[in-house]
Length: 529
Image (cartoon, rainbow, N blue to C red):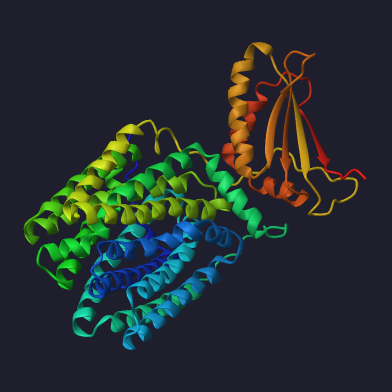
């Protein structure tokens, strides 16, 4: 029996749509890195505070933590093409303000942090929508390679952005970096607008903003795989951000300047690119949990080497190893999140994932910056390197890759919602649904286990509450109930049915011993007068 070869690392780039959007993503990330490098280096000239230097990265990543879920809800509700383009216009506008303030010599440490935070808002807005677009435009079997290519784009920008920023900082100053950022953001916007996306067809009205956020957060919290991924990504970035947040000070400790800082960042990006191109081959026979474990440990060892290296000749390869470990771990966690989310909630789910990632980054930058102010930069990086693997060991039961991934492709329910006598108002509600089961009492324990899975599945689809009741007079008779917020939400839940839900429904029905299928009834909420 032959095993199918994994798709080429570059296979997704053969598709013109992915190739165009990947180019836009590369340009968008180049602007991000150029801004972060320029801001981090500029901060070292505006203040002597170690904490303020570390807070540049916190200010860049904190908006994703604060605005992640709202941006994901917007990406699932609005036209993704126009929304993606608008995020680049925001980034361009912030770059123009930074350029003008730099030219007028108006930048202070607090103002630079504020504008870095504003630039981070662009990242918060654009990341969930791009994460939701990728699985729509590439085949499922090419998704790991596409996600690895996204990592390549991120890390190519980690090379291109710092090199370009370093050259411009040395030759023309920070204003030139911010001006080029504005130009690249506009180029990305134009590329995005060239994409002709297909609008998602539905006869139902669009979701409301607040309700969409509730459903997205509820879906993630009721997914065991997503909960494990969120813990893993938060802890990894809490550890790994120490070396990047304190890298300007590491460069100064080596006696270097902006060029040294740029070289170290570029080395990390180069290592990540090299690893990302081989990830599809490396994944054959190696689980995602294994990648996370070894990637965390390798990053910790590389960070310690960078922290105590007396020479640039040792720091550069150590940073390259850190980049390899970083992309291997981050890509494994991103793939786990993508495979755990159906398309209808993908942007919201990935926004929560990005919140955990950036929350870990922001918390790590602030935490290790404070530690560095008391103990020194090398000991702060070593503390982070010990902290990460220790927490990984303590949470070793959390898995992001055990077992096969569920088939979350859309599927039709077994039966459509029957036409009511009088069509309810779309906002009428709540809607209570009851399902009656008759089972063999000897199978009670197994039935309860399946119904616990059913509870999580219903809540992931957006129901407000769920319950299971046993008939006190008839052994084996159970009533399941769940509440939808409104009639239109009840109808919308039918569109969220997946192939995995079909399999769960079949397992549930296998317990039913009645002559007829389980009886389903629907009730509309009324206000007593």
